Length: 78
Image (tube, rainbow, N blue to C red):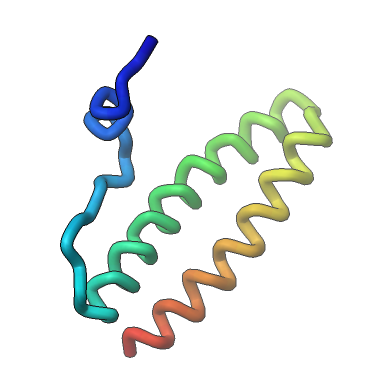
């Protein structure tokens, strides 16, 4: 069985701690969404290639929602 620290070590989204500044917190969330979107686009392509409509629809929904959040968080930071 894996330990929590093993998951943290292998995760593309790195843990952030002791953040008290709102802008820094939003930047961390935004970077996390960008990492997720990259992986989700790969899954979307694989599901398209294998005609897996269920996974394709799921990934499309996730991507659409998270792209909206990325847009909103990016607008906030500007």
